[in-house]
Amino acid sequence: MLVGAFACAHTPQLLARPSTEDRDLVLRVHAAFARVKRRLEALRADAIAIVAGDHVEAFFLDAVPALAVYVGTECTGTFGHYRYRFPIHEPLARAVVEQGVERGFDLFYTQHAPLDYAFYIPLHFTMPEPAAPIVPLHVNVYLPPQPTPRRCYDWGRALGEILRTRPERVVLMASGGMSHFPGTDRYVRVRSPAAGGAQGGPRPRAGGHHRAGAGQDGEHRAPDVGDAPGRGRRGQGRGVLLRALLAPRERGRRVAGVNDPPHYRFPPASAYRLNRCLFALKSDDAFRARFLKDAQAAMSELALDAEDAGAVARGDRDALLARGAHPYLVFMADLRLRMEREPVSFEFF
Image (cartoon, rainbow, N blue to C red):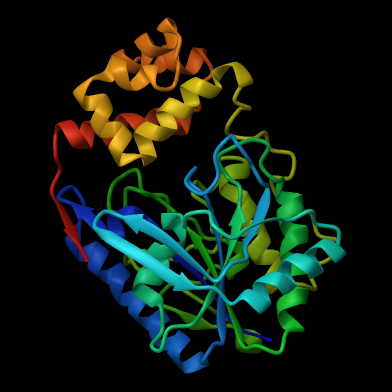
């Protein structure tokens, strides 16, 4: 049975705060997380089904699922000096896959993919004691073709039906980022009809559901569960999914943004080696160290041609994009290299 539901932020600065972030604001979000944790402990959940996007960590261009379920015994991930290991509720995960397929969803499943920070940052702060096993539910947001908001809405309805009929006490957690720049003029505040315009801390919903709230006082709310509200499919799909799950009787209504164009274009196959290099710079510490020591030697490992290698070595964003590089990989590879060359101090929580 579905006994509770929450939406929480996964903004990295909540766990690793650079000096540019407002510490008081971050701590107020932590206080909201603590209230979510107390609610989870009171709900005595047998499992936490957590919906989040993948920041090109678990899945690369070798296999790009639209919707995926982690079905293993445990999952792991890293962030900074943290190492995470969570048990998986395998019977529930298998039921989601099997019953999802019965309902017409060709679900991808994995027993080994690394866990993305979008999953473990909320769990870092809210995992109840004793800890509950989890079921990670991936929604593709970065690598086209992303699922449409309509498909996410339909999957949310189906997922709600599956969870409600299970014997376990299941809590749903949806993970997203309203903004990566809280407290600045780039901070995005959205009042969503999916939350009834609610502001403040975690509030109970009808039927025993709960949602992590946040108002303009800095306590986080993420009713749309997207990384960039209003920016096409990437910022809408998971929010539509959550709305469908929590409001299964909302039938026949128009789903906003169904026809919005995707935010990211399809990476051409000719740019596979280039994107593989950028992915390695983003995610592979050992490769990044070799690159910083001898960039040409590191790139030769991946058989980059001269033009691709030159654009990577120069950090030429426009040239990389013109040659088919994925914009997110360009951004993250550059960020990781700059952090290595010019170390930034973080406060870890």
